[in-house]
Image 1 (cartoon, helix red, strand yellow):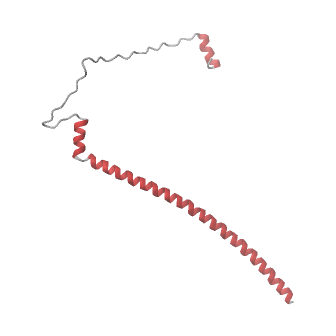
Image 2 (cartoon, rainbow, N blue to C red):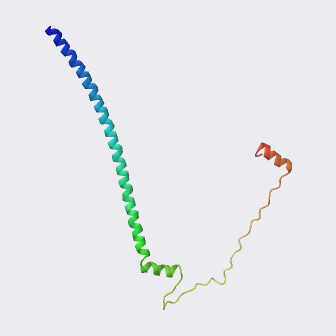
Image 3 (cartoon, rainbow, N blue to C red):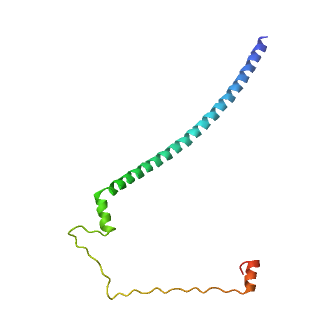
Length: 130
């Protein structure tokens, strides 16, 4: 009887050990999946952090450009360079072209229309490019 009980307990231990190994295998697979997810999310976080840093730099440069646009130096630069304005006391200089210079006319290219015979038009219609 003791041998039967011992064999029964031994069999129960083997079954429990097998279930334990299967459960441990599922835990390892789940851990592997979670680690892969961690690596993916970490890489995504790093790329987002890089993008956020670039956007902060862009914001800083735009704020600097806006501040310069509202400054008096920007208004004066625009007035002198683009609007050709002068301050009181300035002596504007107007550059005149060289009197010996004569501009060369650019020749116009005249396109001649292609004329096709009726049979060529029908041939193109039915057979495509010849």
